[in-house]
Amino acid sequence: MVFHPSATEISKTLFKLNPNKSHGPDGLTSGFYKAAWDILGSEVTSSIHHFFRSSFLPASTNATILTLVPKFPGASKVSDYRPVACLNTLYKVVSRLLVARLRPILSFLILPITINVQTLNSHIYALLTTSLDSVQNVLQVLHEFGGQCAEIKFLCLRTLSGGM
Image (cartoon, rainbow, N blue to C red; front, side, top):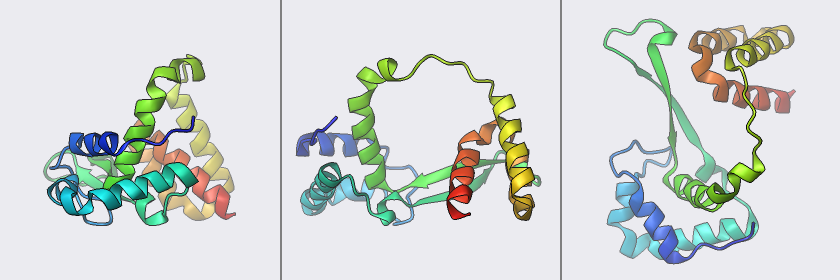
């Protein structure tokens, strides 16, 4: 699937983003890019074209801040918080461009398989517990989040296995 989105497609994708969403690690919201589009538009377009030509995304563009937001006032346990990922705006644009192109063919690429998330979570927890005793505190946090945290567990598993 090789394609180069047009400058119009890139700007339309950016302008569809909610300007009031939280900023990523770079501190820039989509509202900033929209307000400065006349100045930054060609640079943003060039950066995104570079990604689609080279498949290289700088680490700073792919950086994410993971924060915990309380579900209600007076939250005291880890399970009282909701994990929120604050993504870089350019990453959001690239991912939405990819999703727009993949959406029509996804049903042909992914088989309709039902997975029991609770069973999957317990298997991942057991695997991490037996092989990584030194990260017991991280495991406890992941366990307290229960089924809401499968993506984070996969990320941790991938990150930890890559560092072993």
